[in-house]
Length: 71
Image 1 (cartoon, rainbow, N blue to C red):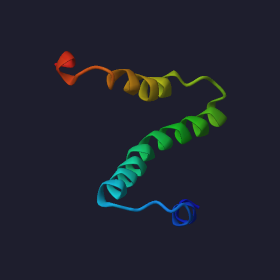
Image 2 (spheres, helix red, strand yellow):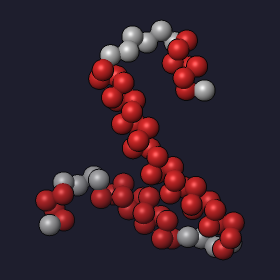
Image 3 (cartoon, one colour):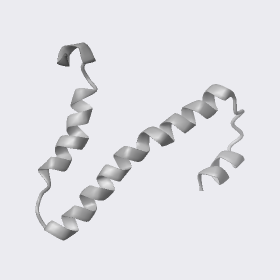
Image 4 (cartoon, rainbow, N blue to C red):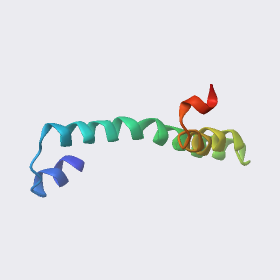
C-alpha cells in the first residue's frame, strides 16, 4: 500500500528523503509492537495493564529530557 501511494504522488526521492522514510519505519516498529502486545495481553488477562503504560508513555516522558538529567 505504501509503495503504491509513493509511486503515484510525484515525490522527487532524494537520499535524505529515503533515509527519513527508513528511519520513520524502523523507529515506529518497536512502538507498534508494544501496542500490539498490549492488545493481546488485554484479551487474555481482561485487566488494565499498567506496565505497558510505563513502557509506552514512560518512554515518551523520558525522551523529553536530556540524558544528562538521569545520570
